[in-house]
Length: 161
Image (cartoon, helix red, strand yellow):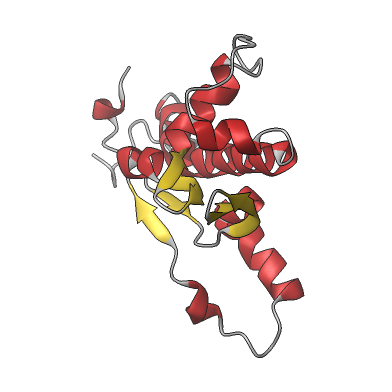
């Protein structure tokens, strides 16, 4: 059964911070790491942000649909970048997430960073998974609850029909 039956529109919310990792040519390469996940970002900021730095100076959270989330850059160096989709494909198809392919990725920026900053990239993938889980949770709840009759679920609930 597709999502059309439930009408839930998953919305993704992701963080605003990029952390300087190293230099890449003339640019500074930055990676989101766990900061991509707004829940972890808030936890880390509460514990570590100096009082002299206003949160507003870091920018706002991003919210959008799956296409907008997949296009978001999680690694940047000047004009170059790696999107959520590119990073997930890399770990799924080259690093053993689904397949293993020892050939270097097609993205020179990712090639340059993956040795020294592999942990930062993996933390970014972990944050991506947490964001996707939260975005899809309402749909999962609808699917599970639709199978149970009222008052234990959504089936036959007079408020929903």
